[in-house]
Image 1 (tube, rainbow, N blue to C red):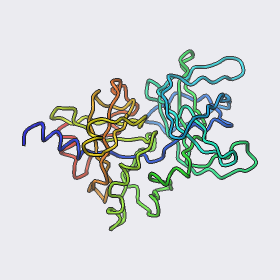
Image 2: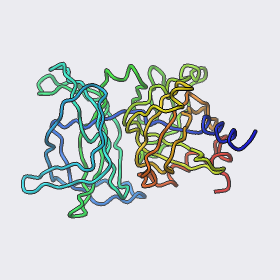
Image 3: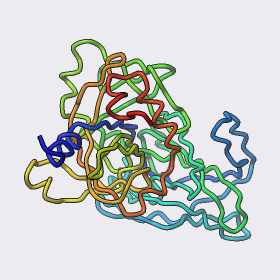
Image 4: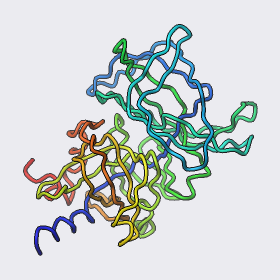
Length: 321
């Protein structure tokens, strides 16, 4: 087997993890609070009571997406430009029976002060103008003028009705529920919402191909790629769009664009794995195409490497690094 064949084999069998909650910017009743700059090694998430209303929700067709350079909010006195890389998605409004395009689905400040809060399911509130339900997170952006960090308390959600086409995960205290099955979290980085899952015996076959095929815009992915060289490159980032290419045509495998991940520019692929103890099992294949600015990254590489230590693929993925 030559190097080209080896690399192709690695591309089809490399590691990926899914933070499997597609999210959206809720926009209705959204607030922003000023917070202290985040120390990645600290659990201090002290907030202040500075509320900033979110403006302008656009309506577009289902499954629309776009990139925006900044999110503009106002505190009634001035507009603030909260810089980051953002995408958008569609959330279904039960009362109006319409799909709304919600900007800022995922926003990452340029210096990586990004935080995902514990997910929760919204209760339907019929008395509200817009009745959204789904799974929610929050985020942190930086005001480029003042240098201050703001917590965007969005309640941004993925539509519960959309979960039928993908994977539905509810974050519990120390376990997650994947569809109708409960899986134990054996490792978790709450700052970046990554986890290794231990699945019940006999359930692994159920997931064959499901995770990869269920990948949605906005999913957080982490994994390893081999960009035409003999050493692995660890990456993490968000799925920002879909791209069709030769891999799509030949293998009928969806290709996704991941932005702001720790990756080299170019195209490669990764497998999505589930875990049984320290053993990794392929649960589907997803091809990932990277933007040229992928090296900017949002999560420190050391936080991703920790998930591979002590697994059956540690030597192959980490080597002597």
